[in-house]
Length: 267
Image 1: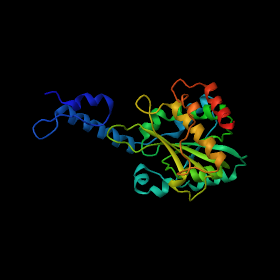
Image 2: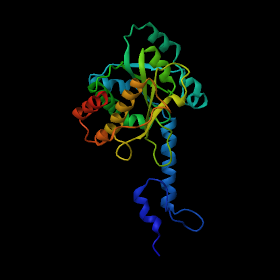
Image 3: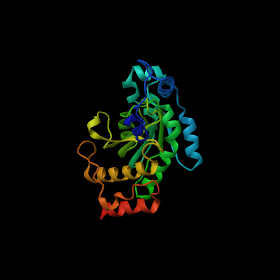
């Protein structure tokens, strides 16, 4: 009899219908599992160079700023989550010494728990976000690149950059189906002490298997505009993108389509 589970494997990356060999897994399924486990460990443990990403962004005309947290090693990052939520003294003093005009968005990139994800998707995603936000009228701070950051470090950075909202792109905790997933967290009125309930998250950004860069950017534009208009983010801000513009969420969304979003939301 044909196993009905086998046909379902084409719809998911989850490990279903693996088969069996006696009381264990077949060799190919076991080897695939071990490979995924190794990829997840590598994603968490390997370092990431913000300098390399900064050079790529600056070569395309983007202004960037490299900062650091209190974390010195990946081991420290895993053992002391609090150190990844705070800027180093040098970086804090640097931002405090800068005279910065008010901006709408502080855009931040960090490797988080997956350097693999940020190496694969970080720069093109940041470029798409910056382009989308600029086209729809947001005033952007210089792009911040910071290694070994946790989500909450965006609160301190956003506050020091005089931003109305922070948006941090971070490598997500890898699983055994995906080691290269990126998430984005939005926080209105960033300041030290904000809670996770005061943030919105867009997860699983990893084309071609997850959300595309264009789809993610359009969703961020909508949530940020709504968050700034209502003066909040988090559990009170729902993804209620109007049906009349929901069709724009596609990989082929153009700059003109993004401008239409701004006009529709302002109407």
